[in-house]
Structure formats: structure tokens, C-alpha cells
Amino acid sequence: MAVLPAPEGLVRAETLMRRAIEVARTTPPGDVPVGAVILDGSGRELAAATNRREADGDPTAHAEVLALRGAARLHGDGWRLTGCTLVVTLEPCTMCAGALLDARVGEVIFGAFEPRTGACGSVRDVLRPPESIRWPRVRGGVLGVECSELMTDFFGQLR
Image 1 (tube, rainbow, N blue to C red):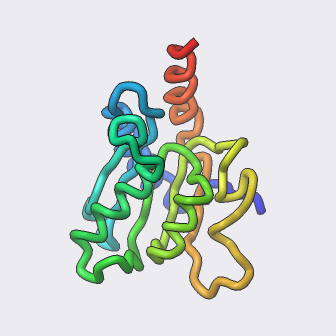
Image 2: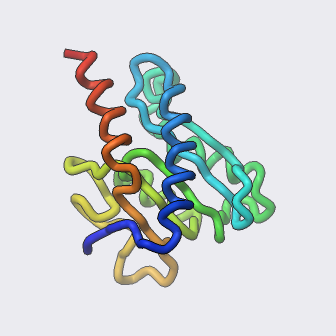
């Protein structure tokens, strides 16, 4: 399945992605710069998070998972984030995509495609399992060049 940004709502998606890029730039040193933001159905930001695997010594401390945890604490329906939107600078991995599906997030907007571990269409498509009765709307490649530059800059500094 090709995951491409839809023309309608693209300005909104780009505006939200700029916020996620801003969050990614606050990633602790040594962690891969990924930023995630979750908004409720009215557009109110519930949570923002960065990768913190190295900082926290936690293999599950991906930006998406930390944002889900923060949003679930504030959202009126607890862990069910129905109607919420997750915006993230990098295509979610299998773990994060599964968590998004379980949390019932209504929309996922991501920036850079992840050709090695992407689970929203690049390598696999966890958010569109045929047996699922609820899956989020997915938009990929939103400000993809800017989001890819975050990764290129980070990994370039490691060399």
C-alpha cells in the first residue's frame, strides 16, 4: 500500500509536523532525534515526547510510546485515544505501530519514511492488518525532507 499525504488537510499536517520537528530538536544527546505530538479531536496538544532510549536506558522509550503514555494520562477516555492524532517525525516501528493500533489512535501523520524498520507501509503495514476492525488514517512523507535531515545530521555526527 502506498502511503502518501492527501491533498486535503496537507497544510494542517505540515503545521503539525513543524511542531513535531521542534520537539525532535529537544531530544537528549545520544538519542536518535525523533519527535512525537498527540492532539485530541479538537486539536489541543495532549502530549509531546522525544526518543529517550539512551537517556532512560529503556528500549521501549520511543517518542511515540512516551507520547501515548502522556496523552493517556490527560485524555478523558483513558488509554483509548479514539479521535486523537499522532504526529511523528519518523515512520513508526512495529512496536510503536502496534501501540498506536491498541490505543485506537484515529490518525497517524509521519515525516520521514524508515526503509529498515518502518511499519506503516515501508517494510510492513501494522496499521492495516486485514483482521482489524479499526485502524487509523495514515499520512506519510509530510515534510519528509526536513524530517530526514534530522536523521542525516544525527548519524553524520556519529561518524
